[in-house]
Image (cartoon, rainbow, N blue to C red; front, side, top):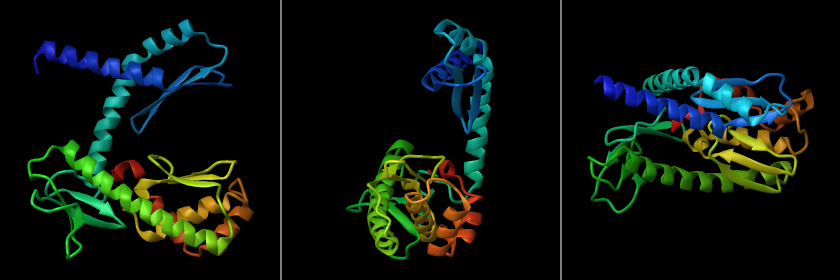
Length: 249
């Protein structure tokens, strides 16, 4: 890479870091200004007393550090994804996880729709073998979200009937750090990436969030009820310790 190209690339990284900082400023009762980068995501914790000019100086002073952290973590995430057989490789001959199984991606412009092959080993996508990653990603993600919506409707209905715990609303989320969440108003959200994992995980997350409707904490009473409803809880929790949603897709 020529020196001018390196300078241009560096400027791009700094601008990306700057935008990421400003887009992720969180004001609150913090003691100090602080910036962190986790899994490539930036967070700037800003005390309410700090003015805009002081915040600007802080962000600019830490820009090089943030850009470096973001770049290194991006490389680490990419290497981790490549080494993980469950992570999606979105190209012809690549792979995607579905219900705990790894399917080989097969691009075929002659099929009528996206579908699983008869031997259940491939996910066939209506695209040319030379299709761009972005195009493959869009079609595969749409297919996974459709399957997720079907599974969510079925399993939430099953567990609501079994437990009597009725959420106000259940919807899909794009979360990469939380498999599910439950708000105090009774709304449950489930990450669509759950469709990549074994059905037992899907059921556990639903039960976990439904029980939060009765125990809005992780108290002993909460875990006792979760385990009573879903005895597979300990084994699923052990499984999830080695799974990151961000690595799947």
